[in-house]
Image (cartoon, rainbow, N blue to C red; front, side):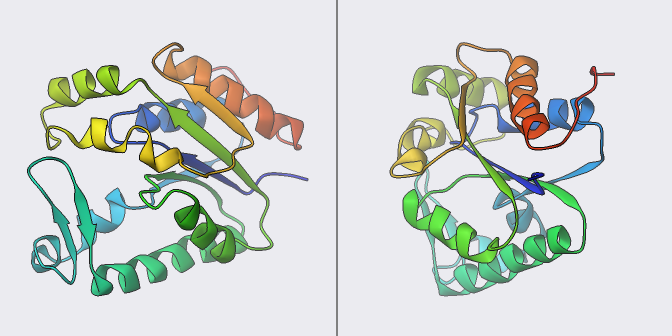
Length: 188
């Protein structure tokens, strides 16, 4: 079995994006990196980013999504799955705010594909410090998401970016992909 999709789930500022960049360097084949939610939000019209029907980010980091956002997100997920079914290897960088229910939505969409589920964990205080250093996140989002995104989610592998550098996390993930048929190479 060869992984076609790698799903990285973790809260804001947990270190998923850094791991993705390293994964793209150490995996021998080209892998597309796609944000499950962040990339969708980037391409949505501004009106959807502040409406009750779309997505709202509160000043304390709480995220609320409405029916129009959910409909667009479902279509986005289907599009990502279609790329994988068409032969692209895909790394999904996501924040499963609904925990197990969010994973089940992805499992349904990705049905029939070989998926490696990876939990990217990080101590909430460290994630909060990263959030402050970045300056492009709503303060409190990292703490609010650090645990809730993992509730009930079943992983093939978990990495902890508070204790392990992102390159080493990526190598551990690549090792699991390699076990399923892929080889890994040294980072560039």
